[in-house]
Image 1: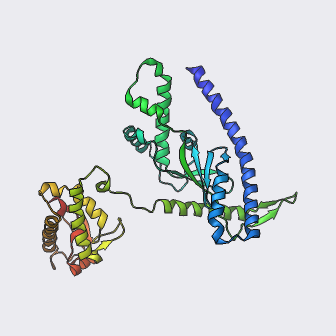
Image 2: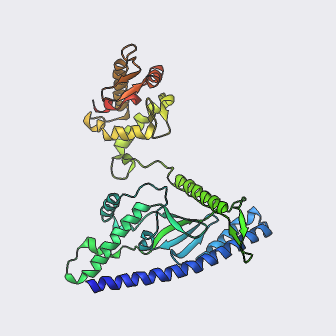
Image 3: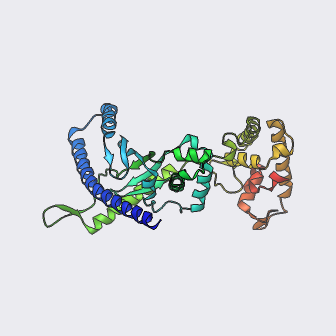
Length: 363
């Protein structure tokens, strides 16, 4: 066992050394290509109508390229490249500094759940950022990378113990899971009209000055933050909307009632899922109605019944927050939280109290 580990370690170091050498060579070629592309772009002044033809040519040429770290490049767009990369390679990359904290326990849960859907492979794409020096970092997908790393480790254990006779259907499927061709998108440095300050080196070559390097780093951080924000802008999908979780009948009843109140009280609904009292968000309301199991509990058979039930709850809250009875600077609700006077004032103005608290869902 010890000799096997030592052999693995030597093999890993040799691969790492070869990868670093290849990476340095690739950086030089990439820098040369970028300079050539910028000069060509400035000289030719390509017209917008030729963009589609140019992109098609770039995509065809890019399929022949091979990144020393990420592997085969299958497409190149003006703002990113597409690669097929191994999970092991992705696991060796650092995470973008402003990413959410990596939680290994989350990756463990994801790996466990993934074993139930091995037939679909690994959906989605891992997003990376490449800085001007060619350094790579994971922008989005760090927990999926952690999940794949755990699954790959299990794959190795299966292969090492395949002669022991311990085989089951899950292990067979896991052994066949392709973790060597993961779809990856790489956002590369954006061309900027304003360049960092440059100084001349002793041999006449240009180098970034201290201030220029700082400006470049700040631009890269801002660019990474912008891409990360763009990727994660979408609101997470609700449990209610996941296939197979709720019946179509349940969704139709909830959608009818939630949409009814959104249309009846537009001033009390917010597009943000992080809205504050007394506002409600449509998707949050839908999810809350589903989680409370009110349809099952009250044996409702139509959206109209749910609309009437919610109306009764709003009436009860109106009495609870009656004028003069809760006019302290901060009024205490039944769940122990506080409701401010501004929120209470707006709820009274629009005669809509459902956003002040959520206990009405369970009464």
